Image (cartoon, rainbow, N blue to C red; front, side):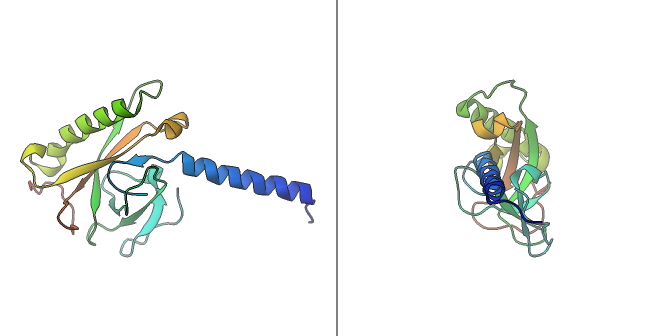
Length: 166
């Protein structure tokens, strides 16, 4: 079937706009990372998945810090990795509360969930945390999740950090 040039241009324009919208609607990561579904990750070598499909217990190598995150590299937790998702906090605000309010809720929630996951209070731990959080653009598309990530700033870890009391 031959598609007229005007329909081809419209189709290309729609595809470009859809891709741009997906990029602009990404989450942000405080201090690390990238995430849209590109492939099913291989558990040993990793793979790129969308930040919106990342879940608690996923281990990741988020890469360099960035303003908006669309894809993230996941790996099996038995492979050396930078971070592990340990808690999901869903914000209830009906409208985007602003970046500072999101960061405040993320810090409070990730700190309070830290002990439950790691087994020691955050203030006594040698580990740290980062988090993915909704941006104004991703909020407009229904994103309300803060995803907490535990990490050892000194080195990559192998295995889960759950119940390590470090």
